Length: 177
Image 1 (tube, rainbow, N blue to C red):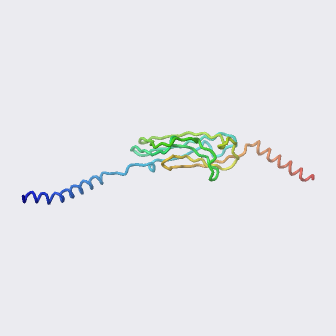
Image 2 (image 1 turned 180 degrees about the vertical axis):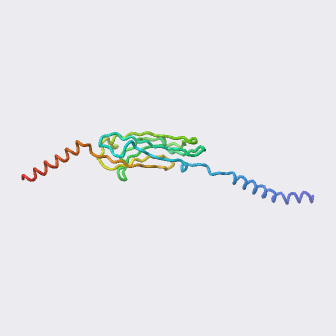
C-alpha cells in the first residue's frame, strides 16, 4: 500500500510536468496562421484621366506572396466588388444584389486573383456623371481589406468649346443691352 500511495502522490506532479513539457513543445511548434493581412491588395485603372463618356477599366488584384496557402472569410456572394465614390457618396457599384452567405476564398502560394471591372460613367440611376474627381474602391466583404485609386474625368473637347462659345455669346449679349 505504501508504494501505491507514493505513486498516487507523484501522479499529479508527473501529470503537471508532462503537460508543461508537451505544452511548451507544442507552443514552440505553433506558428500563427496566415490571414488576409498577409495578402497584397491593389487596384489599377487603364488611365488616370478620362474624357466624359469613356469607359473606365479597373483591375482589383489580390496576391498571396507567401509560400503557404491563405484563406479569407467572405460574408456575401459575390465577395468582391468595385465602388465608385464621389466624395463620401457611393454613386455606383459593380454589384448591387448579394446573397448573405458565410464563405471563404483560398489563395494558393503565389496565387494572383485579378478581378476586372468596367464602369460606363453612369450613376445608379443611369445618368451620366459630371466631370471631376472620383475614387474607385476595391471591396472585400468580410475582411475589410479595401483599396482605392483616384481618377479624373474631364469634359470632352466639344463640350469645352460649346461652353466657351456659349459663355462668349452671353457676354456679348449682355454688353449690347
